[in-house]
Length: 33
Image 1 (cartoon, one colour):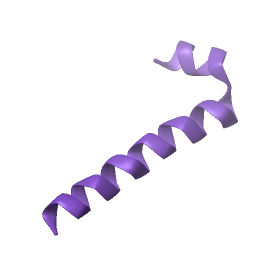
Image 2 (tube, rainbow, N blue to C red):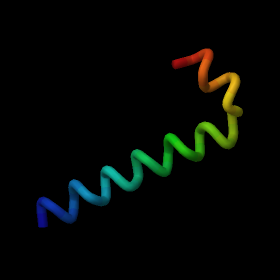
Image 3 (cartoon, rainbow, N blue to C red):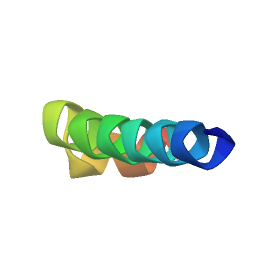
């Protein structure tokens, strides 16, 4: 159960980061990093 929870959090985090790059743009993402 703990492993499933950890995996879900990891996937959501990766998806959020990818979605943020798509919405904001690569250039803005690099500037904010």
